Length: 234
Image (tube, rainbow, N blue to C red; front, top):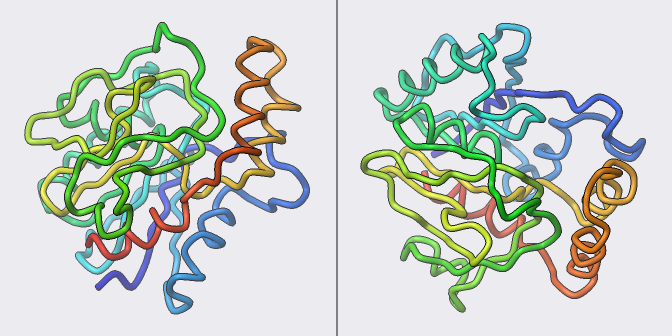
């Protein structure tokens, strides 16, 4: 049973968070605490050289998003990849979200690339591929808020895709029952995604932004259901 979530923060997103969101980690507190108020959280600031020294089977280690790319030539990214390989070998519960999804794939032998099809943004509906997800998504569809330019283009050995869409082939994957990843952001709210599109996407295509804003009205994200699945999966 998961008793604690260790957030391995890979960015603080300075200047991006509205006043209503005090910190990046607060979005994960708001996501998981309604599911289990007894969960505790540890924070490791990876950019400052912090990584968990002890690996525990009752702790979920979660690598969230970043403004950096998995393939960026940065020392902390190489160090984090080494830690991922150690965690995978120990088979502790490991989750990747967006950048974390991509970096776990890359660290374990997969491939991450800039997607030539452009920016993935808004709420995206994807098809569920893995039977473990079906009790949570019986219609075989899952909707998550997304915000990414990169994609996993090759899975690591032993990885099983859990969801897919026309825009992104690998919306997530799992390895056994100790690694689970999602390209989408279960922690994002509609208001936060709208804030990013309207205030921090000056160089993006206007048509793409408008379509993304429309999805925030017509679709309902299911991040809370994904969070329940995450806790139950391990």
